[in-house]
Length: 75
Image (cartoon, rainbow, N blue to C red; front, side):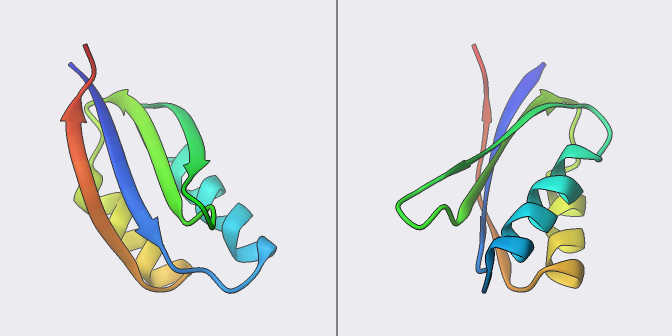
């Protein structure tokens, strides 16, 4: 089952933004990663059997405040 996961990450700089993308992309089961939102503060992950809570926790440890916004099935 393909999932779409949206995580809001509060980052301070472009380096933190790219670090968040790299962390999300290296996770198991991820097919694509993109930035969304007006301030590019939402990381959108599409993949199969992705651990959304695990990625959110890792982003909190490595980048800063992160909150899980949406987990939805892609049709």
